Each structure stands twice: as structure tokens, then as C-alpha cells.
Image 1: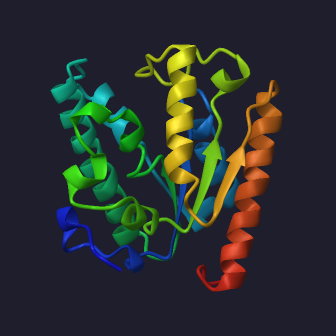
Image 2 (image 1 turned 120 degrees about the vertical axis):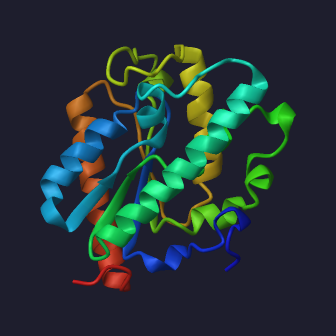
Length: 212
């Protein structure tokens, strides 16, 4: 497997198990991540969402295309290194990643070039970092509001649906990709998501990707 040029010293095989939780704005994934951690206890460690950390910490956010590109490049590197830090610190735990390194492709201004080429990597290389993907479909897909929750979220319902579609386009190419569809009942949606994660962990354990 080719190592991305942007992180030549990193080898994604050096982790025990890494599951990405992603999806469009207002999907409930961040809430789900915390509930999953509570359910699974010390067997997991959370990798927080890099974009939220950066923007709430004062990282500039401007609409100009060059600024959007620069922000997504920075988010990619922070996200990747957050994952690798947690993998190094907790080598025996499952990493639950609140988003992943591929998400930036959905926010990339396409007229300015290719996200992966700009980073010296490929979609295939980034997908190979993760053992499974759970995709939380945005509530906006069902016409439901996405207000509240993440303070840095600013997308309209239409924008949220478009981002959801672009994210699914990339992540759905993973061999272990599962969608948690929107539901009028947030409780039912999260409950289903928890069941999906439990099943995915069981499958990975049977395959030998997770040690018992």
C-alpha cells in the first residue's frame, strides 16, 4: 500500500481498529460518538472532529476559494494527526473517529483542483486508514431542521443535503460502509446506529481485525 507523501512517516496499519463516523451536517454523529463511548467503555477512544476544534478555537473561516482550500488542507492534517496521536497513545483500543480525513473532499472548491492530489494522497489510501465507516445521514435529507448542536455549523438545509450527498459519494467506496438513515425519531436513529456499531465491531473481531 502506498504511503501518502504528505505523511511519509505514518503507516495506517499501526492501529488496532479505526472506525469513522461521518455524514452530512445535522446527522447526529457527534452525539452518537459520545453515546458509543459510554456504551463500550474503556474499549474505545474518541478522536474529536478537527474542524470543530479549529473553528471554535479561532481558526479563520472565510468564503474566498483560496481560504476554503487552505482551511480544508489544515483540517486534513489536524484530523490525521489527531487519529495517529490517539492510536499511539491507546494502541489496544478501538478508535471512533468523529469524521475522517476524506471529509474535506466534500467541502473542497472543485474548480480549484483535486483535494487528494493537493495533499499527495489518493482516495484509496485514505479509505484504507479505516476499518469501517458508519454514515449518519443528515436530517436535512428528510426535510428536518438541523439547528442547534454544533456551534460552527452554518449550512442551510439545501447545502446540508448537497454536502451529505458528496460525502456519501466518497465514503461509500469503502468495503465496510453502512448508512444510518434519517428518522423523525432521533432516539430511534441513534439506537439503530449503536446497533450498527456493535455489529461492525463483532464482525471485525471475528475477522481478526480486533483482538478479543
